[in-house]
Amino acid sequence: MRESTKIMFKKHGWRIDRFIHNYIYFVFYYPYVKISYWIVLSFKYLKWFKPIVPIGKMIFNRYHSKVLSHGDTDKIFTLDEDIRIISDENKKIIPYKYATKIIFQEPGYIVVMDCPCKMATHAPEEDINSCIAVGKSVASFWLEHCRKYNPRKITQQEALEIIHRFRKKNHITQVFLKVATGGSTGVICNCHPDTCVSLQATKMSGKIDKSLSMTAESGYSVLHDDEKCIKCGTCQEVCHFMAIKFVDGRWDYNKEECMGCGLCVENCPEGALKLYDDPDKPLPLDIDKISHGITRFTNSPETKKTSRLHS
Image (cartoon, rainbow, N blue to C red; front, side, top):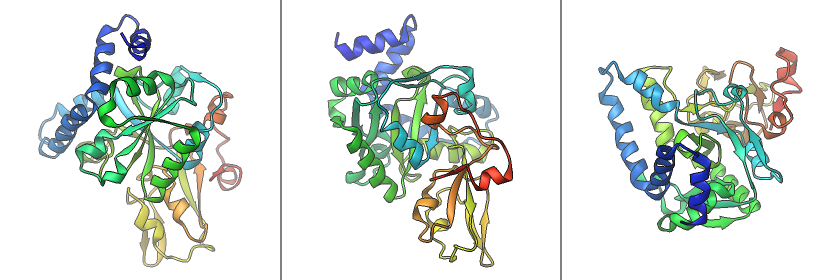
């Protein structure tokens, strides 16, 4: 038995079923996600099927993602110590029932591999190698068992360069959690709605029932400075969630639709947009704050406009 297999086996303890699921999931990464993609495409034909809502919730409680801001992503890829936070309080950050552990062990051990979503959706070849494992547990398994998906070990700086390159191409950053892989963080991917099965699943299921989502918001909303805004429309163009529009020449923002990815902030040529930690949304996965037991700043309009601005 290979060393990475032993690590995986030990992680699941007596739950042999989860070890087997975890093993199959990564060894057959592409066909597993390809089948999931077909299921997602079938959602639009199943609106009439009433049991799909509880079935969807059951699935999404076990496999989901959390959107990360650029700043919070950078903090993960500059970690120099292990982070292990296992608590029901995590559900304030990752608002799902089961897979909510925040674990980054040996965070400098990083591997990038082909993304099965991008393979399934026929993304451009240069975009496919974009799925990142942080921590030896998953990363070493990819190296030993997933050679057909072109895994390669990279440094933290190289990981940041990959993240930055994809964000310039309007990809958002997500961390994925799955009960079968230990219910914890560890896989971070660069996602675009056109080529991400997770984002497409959230979009499709939301048409059936608004409560169905496998994508948790980052925890941030957008603050607009009308004096700086030149009404160029760039923020509207880059928003994947149609949260920003210009109506009669005025900036119009739908906070409920915003996932807080921060692409609009990064692309605004005049610096007229900022992210703020929004108390109406799940807590951000901000390593600095959660590792020191800080949850959220006080809820006041003044705080939103000043101390909670997030770049």
